[in-house]
Image (cartoon, rainbow, N blue to C red):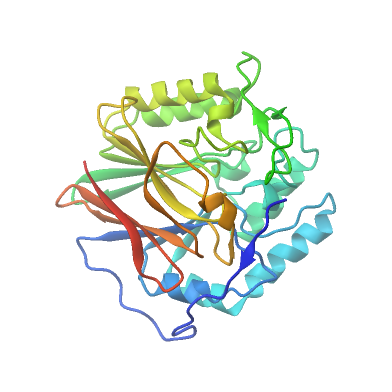
Length: 336
């Protein structure tokens, strides 16, 4: 589809002993997406050096575009055996959601016929507890609450695949293998009725900071591929849902094999920020050069990960995108 550049990460202390945790006043969340299990995976070591309390794996956790479920299982088995990943998991909890390449095939949505079987395969791969609600309902959306210094940090993880209507096909425009037009039909959905009702109920809970995890970017109106903006009615409903909730919102996403920070004004009473981290061992250089009206600063055309440092005592979250050497290349801050 796209021309990717395969890169090797800076590899340091891959199999080191136990690392000290973060300072008590900081809760550190790292996140990224798009890890090809057949390429170098030493970037886990670089991410681990930030000593995260939690890692949000925001989609394309493996690449296995196929209808053959045995191939899917083998891809996840290879990930689970990977030494850098297994070392990382010893010290950091991983909360994962799928995107297209680990769910089904390129750009797959609700019409994928193996989605029920894939739900079990995916949740098994990431050691989801047997009594988890993610196993009890269709789709792998979920939420968590973290209490820090009396403040509630809510993490809401959306499933942007299981229920989503098929894209409305557009013309082929290089470098895209396909493009998608806006679909404003009432019957078209991004999350499906059950997930929408769940999301609304979650946002009615009290929280000071809410982190919305979407494997598909929300703030990407100039991109012609997969994006929330291709379903304008659904995205307007999402914005309305965010506005009705207490606290502050921050969106994290992946998918596009480069990193960036986006910001839109006028949707909420404060600028809504989306931090995109994508490409743990591949980079889409052409994509990183495309215009984006909501982008703040430059792109990170390198393997990358995102970081949230939440200081609940000061009611502040610092967000950043880090390149292959582990250094922050983009950064910002949100008070909540």
